[in-house]
Image (cartoon, rainbow, N blue to C red; front, side, top):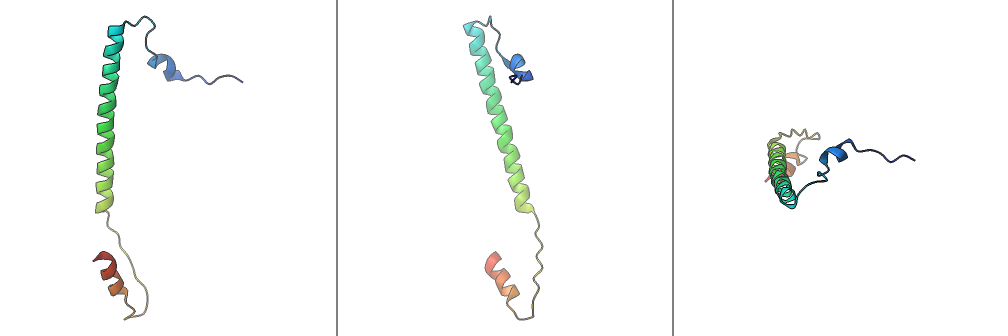
Length: 78
């Protein structure tokens, strides 16, 4: 069974002739990129949560009059 080939593996692999100084610089850049990515992800998540909170929900209560529908809504939503 052939091993699947990841096209990004070859591109993302560090150079074979990398010096320790170059490695340190590369690792620092990767860490900075991870921090930026995490910040962007957190921002997207916060925006998504804010949109969910702003979402308007309409509810239709069906039933006989004087059956306590408005009392139920006051109990749920304060």
